[in-house]
Length: 374
Image 1: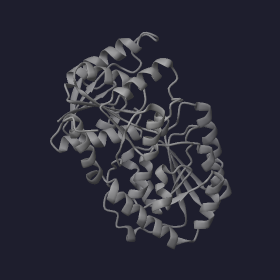
Image 2: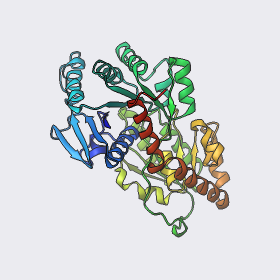
Image 3: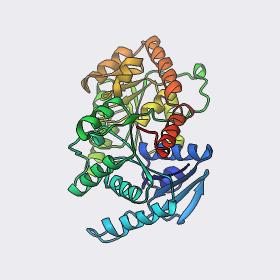
Image 4: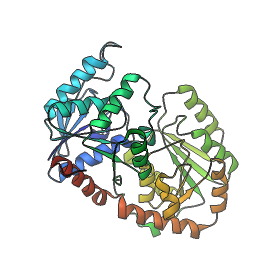
């Protein structure tokens, strides 16, 4: 099976080189592409030009590039060189199946090329707003049109949750398959040998308004006996980022780490007692899977498909004001935390570790290629 992933921002995640963005989508693409290549498939990933060679191999995956993200004249570069270079890369990939993740105009571009060349196209949801008909994250009519077109033309659509599947059906009349997201397995943990002192809460995310980092600062202020580690790259709103960082520096129980390479995240997960999410919305966050893989319960303002509550994977709070109350309830209740930690490790190992989740993804691609997917 020949598979091509169109993931413009995935160069750094694939190669480990450069200073580009790495988010959940990019980590998922890198993991998935390398797993498929390891299991005998011919895999290509298309990324932006960040100064790398036109084509190179990494762990059995061929990486091709399009133009630089900032190339061309504003107003014209949508067509040349962005769309034109993408068309060339899609042809060069010569795949049976083309895969794209995240709602954007590229969804329609890839779908149109695949249909016109009698190839298969698979689209995967990245977050809940991808499934809402108002498409509030897509600013222009052109972007919304091309995304809707690609969604309708897809030979298969993959959702992260049943909630997303329902929203796609209601808002777009599109059926989706719900697949568990894969996650890298952490190294051997020897959990019984880890000695954690006090209560340590880990917050990981991009510093922007959607992630609502200001909430964790308020929690830290109201829970002075709890230590907080804040990890994440700055968002695009520099004033917001500066304000958050200035406030964080004024609190003695906050350790501000900024952007941290994924390869170095293990130490932060290992020392954490709990993981906290304050986001306005999410899909199925990679950070949840990473935390659960280390046996760390999650306190969160979002609960995808209510899995946190149903499987005792932490505490889903009804609002931000409940986070501090929940932490205070858990301080000293090591037995309850240990029970949630055990449930988290079990949930991860039975559903999301890559060698459990990836065969289901592989089977879906094979069914699409053979025309068996409904």
